[in-house]
Image (tube, rainbow, N blue to C red; front, side, top):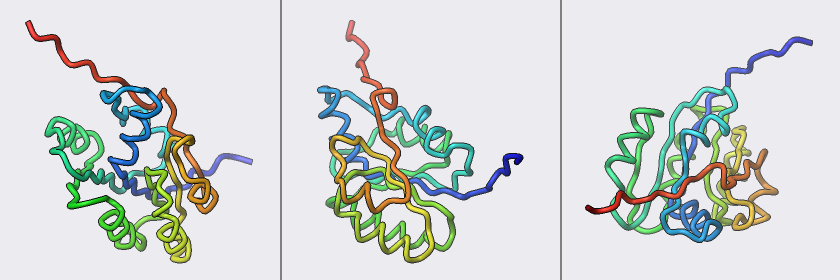
Length: 162
């Protein structure tokens, strides 16, 4: 049988604080950052990216990072007042009728009800997270789990001051 290319439209919603905490814990470095140029193609697996939204609470987000996400993936960064769960959940619900698949980058069990809701709306829901810090129930509820491993991040080394 020949391979039939399924043209799926995917939205990636990233709970930045959750993912950052997870990779910092695993890498033992506060300077670890997700390598989106490696991770996004892996998550999409030849499917079309509808949008990429990075939710981040607290500290200012690097404008360089925001620019790169926008240039490379038409991505946007949304600063959150408190945690990302509510803004991310609202956005996921708004996108449910516009995409085939929503990938939630977070291991937080707070998203279990959202995953159930989206699946009830007929959306395929995938979770991308660090297995060690991801809630088992969240992994079990998802249609697919993408493990974020050390190949998917890098440790940022600040330029030495002269």
